[in-house]
Image 1: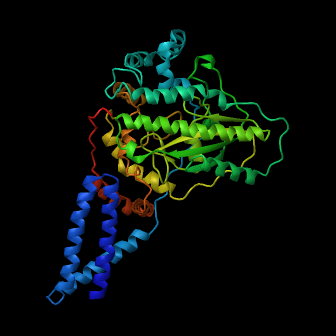
Image 2: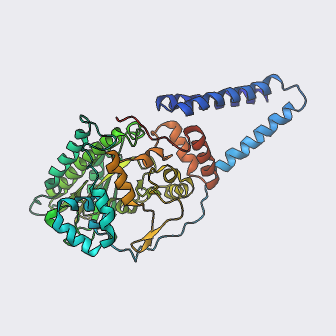
Image 3: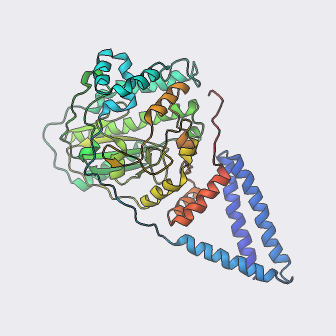
Length: 446
């Protein structure tokens, strides 16, 4: 028994020390402090069992700890999640891009379009008018505005706007004979080479495409039609450290950086496909015909999270997406394992909803809109807050338990919560304990 006690003493303390070291590197002071307390308590427990094994009742208590620990480990390895009711997507109404807040915010600069839009949507005129009265992202007047740093992300989005022409291009004459499996692998390898952390392929369905254009005046309101049948989805991971500063300025600087990086990858992939003689279009920030999240979900890369954006099984919501659609025949990717566990965790966690500064995130069951049940947010409240603070907030991303570096300790936790609901409840309790349930919004301006 003494030898086993020493082994458990060493193994458990090594685990706690690894967690402590990781917390120090991640600048998580609360987690590091509690890890030291856990290290002290764990050491005292096992040293007590080792030194006082001769006392009456100590060996019985020691054995009870082993039995309970063994049962805990055994239960933790069981993989079981109750079946989840599927979504009926046959009745999904296509999303009109004119209805998103980015498009509605631009209406203030185009009065003739505004009159047309609000004639059909009179209920949105007043709320949009209040939002229009706030400074634009990157302009003076917002809380986190910085005269030197804010223009940096504004320059990034201006650059993205100027690269819109790269989304489409001349298709090489004569379709080259290609092997679908091989070209799909090459596309994935190329995307990863240029910085993607994940890549997926799916067949295009009607609900993947906006019904009408809404972001740009030259084609505003025009119906979107495409002959493309496949979509490639690229995932890039943002810096957890920068996102943890949300909603302060680093979050929008990081967001803009990865919109640029994801656009670069999409433009290259689209150009590669066109070079083979097949039409292709890249879809990047501010220049979409597609809805990124449904495509990413159907490509098997992740799920739609409670916070209303894409959740990756490794990087959580701390990612950005870009898309390439094409007429080329590709091989769809298989769903990654563990998707049900992420959805189940979103059901119980609610940390994003509890921390949202504007209460834009639903705390109850999935709401229904556009003819089906899915997570969605109050985009008017959310975007209005963006304009008040001068960043794209990202506080929900920062507080999400999945927004952790991809280190060995967090890999272990993700595996643990992928097994069963009990594990998830325990993991959520520990995440609240070590990292805090409620986060404070930074008051520093940069």
